[in-house]
Amino acid sequence: MSIDRRGPFGGAGAVVLAMAMAAFAGPVAARDVYRGFLDPGNPQHRATLDILERLQKTPNDASLHNDLACLIARDGFWRDAQREFALAAKLDKTDGRPLYNAGLVHAMRGEWGGAASSFQNAVSRAPGNWAAWWMLGFAEESRGNDSAAVAAYKTSLRVDTSLFDVRRNPFAAYTRLKGRVLLESLDGRLVRAALPVTEQMAEAGLVGSFQQGHVAVSAMTGGLAVGAPEPGAAAPASGGPAPGDRAVRPGPGGAVVTSVPPVSTSRPAPPPNASSPQPTPAYTRANEIIPSDIPDQSPAGSAKKRTPAPAALEDGVPAAPPTPAPPRAGPGVG
Image (tube, rainbow, N blue to C red; front, side, top):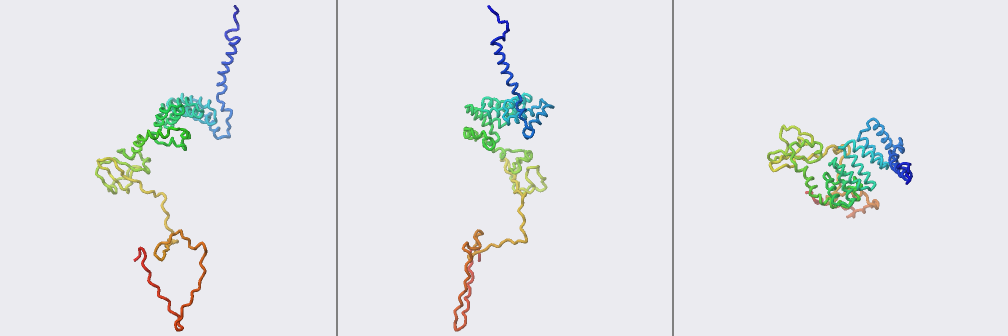
């Protein structure tokens, strides 16, 4: 019996080893391919180079790795982008943005299994990321999991329905579950929409800037009173009714509307010009105002000037002109 003394990797084993090394060397050689295509004259590439310079000083900055991956993904370097997203998610285990962005890359490539996994991890870290909930629904819908998709879509509607608007979300043009989701979530959305006008806040000023242009709601107790505020009352906090507003204080039955913001005076109407008097409306013989769209002159032109015929003579003396009848009172006169 002969023994191959060239070792376990001799002959065919050497070929297998060479192929394995080539397989492992491929991804390593392809790492950071985007660096060779960066043009300092391109604003986006200039931003990429700036982030690379900052990463040399703080290599463990998760937000920089996330932003770098976003810029790389825009140029189509998917592998480098996913690698940076994964590193960012590892460096900061509380940030869901890198996982959400990784899901977008998977979605752009039609990798719906990876997309669903990334979006699920994103909402696990950040349950308030409504866009990630919507994209999770879209990924599940693309995989054929309608029940899971509807559940994720409903969660994304906690704030509004704009994620189903193609002007904000281009993926919304491809979902076939929009009608079902909006119908099944209607009751819950109506309740949430009613909260701002039904909740009884003890300190309405806490929402300050939010109430600008909205109806203020108060929870003060007491009898119903309509009119100006009580004499000597101090000006309320920002967002509350001004001292000159009409106020309504609710009784024990619950909160009611307390004030409506006055009409905006930021652009008052310009004062009339004293040098140009206001035009006087023209009236017909029946004392009716002539519409302003009637032209002053007929399109056929002005009428030809006619010479009046002489009055008849009586014994050589011209007849006296007839006395005009007094005008009859028209509508609104007399």
